[in-house]
Image 1: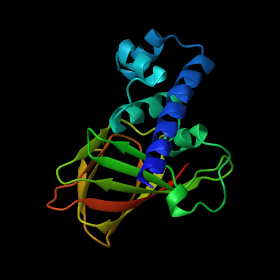
Image 2: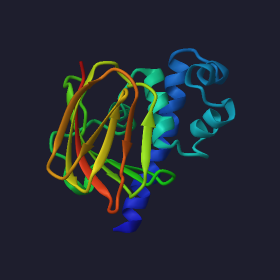
Image 3: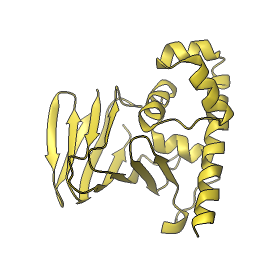
Image 4: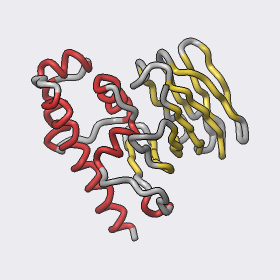
Length: 193
């Protein structure tokens, strides 16, 4: 089972590398232009596209913003045609080892639909910051299933405990932090404008 999940993760990472290169090429951008727009180095972007390096959650968030996509939408583009029913064992999982973040696409996004559900898990002390939303005006609902999550939306910090739900429109920066002592597991519902 672990080997199958490892193979799936490698397939997602390989597909992500290819898709990032395709997105840049579709816009006719050089690596230098993408570096300017994303604020990341040309060499790092090149390593992402060659599959030599996997982006962190924050880096992937910046690339999604540059390309005008949610992270789920980008990961969907890496996969084949999404099904209506996706068993738990077949849901796309992406890990950012540097920030101790696990992201599961519970309901795969679909080109004709605006809402999606994502499960997030952050380890104690872990934090992810996004400079701006991939699509301004995203409606988000965060329902904490285990632990505590601190969510900063623009300059307001909300402490969301087990069973609590936070709802907001995302137009600026955001930050997710697990203050601990245990991990936090939450459901994130995203509705595109």
